[in-house]
Length: 308
Image (cartoon, rainbow, N blue to C red):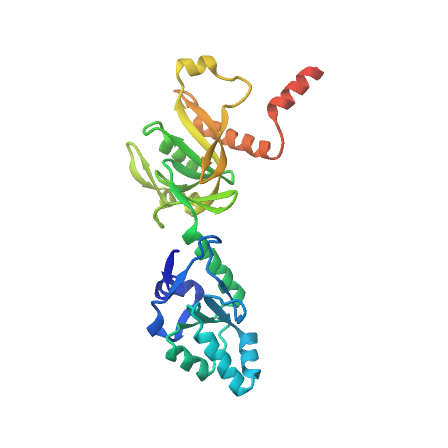
């Protein structure tokens, strides 16, 4: 179980969710516990059958509570605020709550928080936030880029020219996501998303001989992207004599790399003097996109050759 206090949730997301305290601040150290099997905390509209850790109350829920007879309404609120699973209550849509709800929140030390956003937006935001918090993650050595709309991780030994290639790609209109050690998280069974390990460090690229460069300042805002789904890996390797002799002439050296239990297509791009790696990588990405659409250039070539 991974706990998260209401206080930490409020501090980190008050601006995004327009949160403000109504009552129960003395219970702000209550912890949201995530179910390890589903990797989610239970969040939802007011529900007395399925207890939610975070109960969302909007206009319709308040209207329902107000229509109850006084003694039934009091019993209902007491049941709500004394539930062992309850961590906090969020009032959405900026609706005005009764003094009884505020009093019970104070009495039972239950955080009562208000948001001007709709219930759907609050629920979706919290689910996304908790999914990110619990997602599997890994840091890989390389440069992560958005090339022609495809998330590409450039890998290779230190000093082989990853940063120089990234700089040339940025100068050609592509985007830098993260240099050196991008972090990847698994956001769904078949999707891995990458970003910079440290938020705000996306624009910086280290190039030998030039030092640290801010590509956003050099090339504009369009040169940087905060995050991208990983769809393709390009591994740079020196072009040795043995590799040159045994190279496959018709097909690229294609394989897959397993990243967080997801298979990502990977190719090896030989590095040698005179080879324009930026053009080669762009073509590799275009070819990968065509292959995803079902087109095979080698198959097409052989078919045309047979027809000739």
